[in-house]
Image 1 (cartoon, helix red, strand yellow):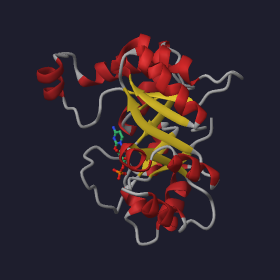
Image 2 (spheres, helix red, strand yellow; image 1 turned 120 degrees about the vertical axis):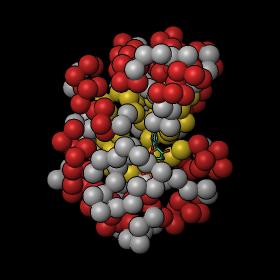
Image 3 (cartoon, helix red, strand yellow; image 1 turned 45 degrees about the horizontal axis):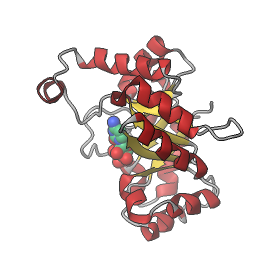
Image 4 (cartoon, protein in one colour; image 1 turned 90 degrees about the vertical axis):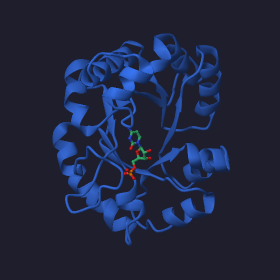
Length: 232
Ligand code: C5P
C-alpha cells in the first residue's frame, strides 16, 4: 500500500469539479468524491473522473441493514472505485456483508474502510445522544478493531489517532486521515489538525486534503506542497 494525498473534491457540480481537475497539468491526484457531488451527478461523475486517470475514494459512508449494504456495494464495485467506506456502527454483520458485496466474481475488490466516530461527534453528544459512556479514544479503538476483525482494510480517523490505530490493529491496517492543514494555513471548521509532514510522522497512510487545495489560488502548487511534505 502506497502513501498518497487524496484531494477532497467537495464541489456541487460536475462542471466545477472538472474545471478544478483541469488545473492539474502534472500528476493526477487521487480524488475523494463525497455525498454532495455523487448525489448531484450520479455514478457518471465517477466514471468520468476515472476515465481521466484518477484513482477514486468514494466517501458515501454506508450504514443500513447488511443485505441492503451488500447490494449497494456490489453496484459500487462495478463502478471500479479504489476505496469506499461504511460506518463501523453498522456492526460486524454489516461490514462483512459490505465486503461480500464488494468482491467481484474474479475475487478483486476496492479497498473498504470504516468510519469510527465522526469527528463532529464529541464526548458529550456520544453520551447523551448515543448512550455510549466510554471515553472517545476507547470507542474509536474498539470500532477500529471491530472493523479489522470484520476483514476491512482500515479506518478514516484523525491523524492524532493514527499511531494508536496502528498499535491496536497492526501496521498493515490503513489509516486515512482528514483534518490536514499547512502550518501557515487557515483552520476553517476543523479543530484538531496536523500538517502533512506531522501526519507522515504519525504514520498516516493517506491524508485527505480539501480546502487547503480546493480554495488555493494555485491548487496544483498546494497539492504538490502536500505531496512533498507527506511523501517526500
Ligand atoms: O476541507 P477539508 O480539508 O477540511 O476537507 C476534509 C474532507 O474530509 C471533507 O471532505 C470532510 O467531509 C472529510 N472528513 C473530515 N473528517 C472526518 C471524515 C471526513 O473532515 N472525520
